[in-house]
Amino acid sequence: METVVSVMMILVCFNYLLKQTYRKPYFVVLSAVVGALFVGSMWPWAIEQSKTQIGDWLADSALMHDTAVVLTLEVAVQMAFCILAARIRTSGKVRARTLWLYRLLRWFPGVLIFPVLFSMLVAAIFALPGVPFPRVAWSLAALVLAAVPLAAWSLKRCLPEKEIRLELLFLSNALIAVLGIVATVNGRTAVAGAGAVDWAALGGVALLLAAGLGGGMAAYRRKMKGIIKNR
Image (tube, rainbow, N blue to C red):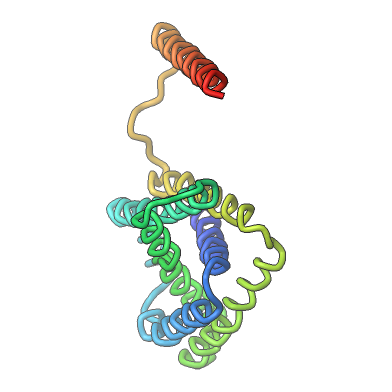
């Protein structure tokens, strides 16, 4: 479970930095300042945490379900941004409402980065025993302040094509959604596993898939014939 959560935290950081590549430099710096101030000011709460308490949080099904709601909303917003961005780039003309919604989603920084920064602060305090807590917090804040603009600039230089960064952002959010399901299930399943295969149900699903595939191909061919005739 802890491994899955760690992978999700890495993906959240990657998504956050990848989203910064679509913003103006001054907003990237402002976002880094907000994150640094958050890290530096949260040390009084971070020192109250313990590894045992964090493990209890991961084992708390109610808390994990609430976290899944926030995770789902975050992923939905980021995927909506990717879809709108792709639509604007491929469509010749878009509505003003669509353009305003795209701008709003582009400036949305995300909320999952703040729990990740808090967990990084807790891990840093555990890793540096004997060092004053404010020094650890503000040192990590200075690191965040310098790392966010530098990492965003590096990603933009390594991936100059906006389309590739958009695809990566979409796929990374999809992976977070899948891992979120695994993490929030917490080792439990909703139904008991079945040892036998229901061949009637499997055949029905196969027939539905075949009918949908055939109908889609027929509609596509009819549409193509209409386009050719109009030309």
